[in-house]
Image (tube, rainbow, N blue to C red):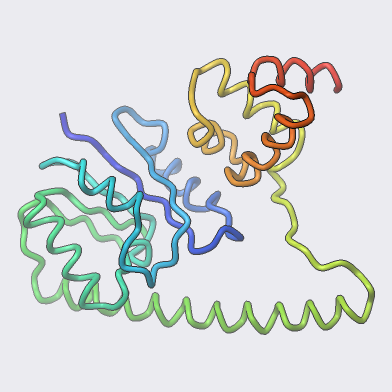
Length: 223
């Protein structure tokens, strides 16, 4: 039976992946039958991505790869990205769906000239957009640091709205009740995975145990 793989990539650990998750959920992919989702923190300019490569290696003929946008498949340039997609659908014989740009490429088919042109245009535009965002982010951080230092306010990363005690308990309950790992639980509750892992590590030390059920009982009793 063919399988669907949803690949979620964020460029840095400062980004949240909630938006991509919600898009997949809206399309009924995540939590669907026979669907696996992979989350990875890795810049698109790198040519090697461990989790992505592992996923591709285990995909079989007839499987489907789904990405939120073409930028998630970026391999350091337009030509490399196009070669990667062609390799997937022709050599690997897997289907490729790119939601944002609306590409639904079938296994075995050869992209025509118009499709290659559009893929190239979107890839270039995506890189242009990322460059603009990077420049604006750097300018914004400079302004925040400058204003923060003047006002005496501390400068730091703000916790996600999902990273609260109530949702932490919900995430831990989901892990215990459904016998799943942290990745699936945090995808279900939107609790940022890296933040959840850090919060859980603190509780390991605080209560001197790594038993999820014991920790859950303790923190629920403290409410």
